[in-house]
Structures are given as structure tokens and as C-alpha cells.
Amino acid sequence: MALELVPATSDHIPRLSVICHEAFSALHDRCGIERDIPAPEVGEMIIGQTVQR
Image 1 (tube, rainbow, N blue to C red):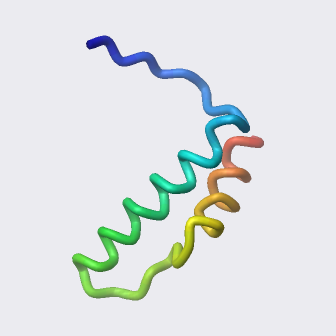
Image 2 (cartoon, helix red, strand yellow):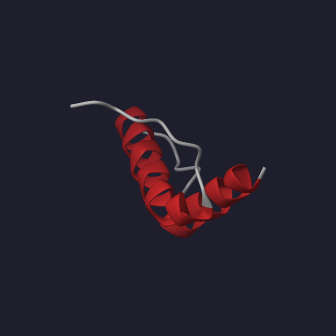
């Protein structure tokens, strides 16, 4: 299976925000520290700003 990397677009933001939230939540939970991204909506703000650049 080939992997194709494409530039992120606004269509990708919803899924990328969930990935961001889940990945950082798992990391913070494993390390026992407070979450920086407490909700998918926060991940959406971060990813949205990054994609728009």
C-alpha cells in the first residue's frame, strides 16, 4: 500500500483535530500530566491555524 502525502487543506481540519486531540491526550495521560488540548475543539483551533498558514 502506497502512502501519499498531500498538503493539508481546510477539508482535512476536522479529522486532523481529532488526531491531534487523541494523540496528545494519550501522551499526557501516560505521563500523568495535565492535558494541553482538553477537547477536540481546541485541537481544531490549533490545526485550523496551522493549515491556514
